[in-house]
Amino acid sequence: MEYHVKDLNLADKGRLRVEWAMRDMPVLKSIAARFAQEQTLKGLRLAACLHVTTETAALALTLKAGGAEVCVCASNPLSTQDDAAAYLVKYENIPTFAIKGEDGDTYYRHIHQALDLKPHVTMDDGADLVFTAHTKRQDLLGDILGGTEETTTGVIRLKAMAKDGVLRYPMIAVNDAQTKHLFDNRYGTGQSTIDGVLRATNRLMAGCVFVVSGYGMCGRGVAMRARGGGARVIITEVDPLKALEAVMDGYEVLPMGAAAKIGDIFCTVTGDIRIIREEHFLGMKDGAILCNSGHFNVELDVEALARMSASTRQIRESVQEFKLKDGKCLYLLGEGRLVNLAAAEGHPACVMDMSFANQALATEFIYKNHARLERQVYTVPLEIDREIARLKLQAMGVIIDHLTPEQEKYLASYDLGT
Image 1 (tube, rainbow, N blue to C red):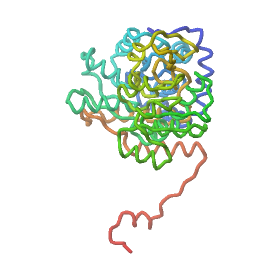
Image 2 (tube, helix red, strand yellow; image 1 turned 180 degrees about the vertical axis):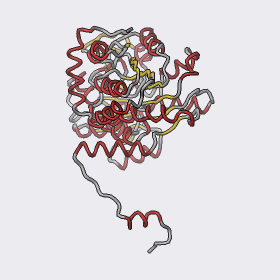
Image 3 (cartoon, rainbow, N blue to C red; image 1 turned 60 degrees about the vertical axis):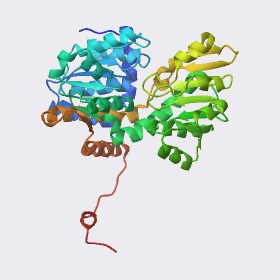
């Protein structure tokens, strides 16, 4: 079996951490039990390009339980948990290609090694796997039945490909499932981002000015947790509806040019490029902290920051100091990559339980229904979303009401009015 991980001696630590994570993943555990009994995915080859964490290991085990042949590679050079990667190789015999801190060449070599499995289904977090298959490994496209995509940035790329008519197989936007973006994006990103900032800096949140760029689900989560920590939170937005919602939620909304002058900590969560640029760096206070929780490391213009600087140094783990030519210092966390994974452990397992349940059930859906799917981006079927919510409530011991026959009739009728 081919693999490339940092150190197999980390596998025992990884096994314990995976066990700990799986205690908080009851939905995925119930799906794994059904998959194992039914052998739902028997004969399926699946290549997954995800953040290689303990929660991802639980997903890989679920797919393997269903009979799938699984291969895993990293979707971000800094997000791999090396002990989880070692565990997958040593104890689960799952080919894994992921090392925290790998360079760009190694990152893409790992993607190609995952594609060497000749997968029937691709599983992505950022669409690098599917994009590589479409551009560099087109010989594989004829055998690929479909794929799934985990994150907003990846869905944006895939929808652009579909619009231009270059998408060669159907994709399911797992990110758009309500049990994913309402919980993972908001509660998962919110908590794990603040966790990454605090682990990297050990700064006090209370009393600081925390600037959040983007008020989508991820931005709402970050803003909520920063405010909960006592920060004065400022939102920057380009969408008038989201900006209005931020105002109604009690946040101050400013353009980045104004926010740059007063912010202490800046976090981008937009999915777009160069959100904080040279003109913003010039206006910032000495000691301002910069981080990103969007998928790709393009939201902060790190190249411009380096160009403007007289010197740089690593002042703490995950903290790089940029001393500008005027003597002012700005601090970049996690190289501008996902701060919640570069400087912390990513989302808590209980929210990844729902996200990865979507991944598992979407894979089953593709395997069963690929013949009738077109080359476009699909939303997770509503019945899957509701089943995951039902299983999660059941695991939490929460009981909800059901419609009476009278209520069902009323909701389906049009002749019962005032």
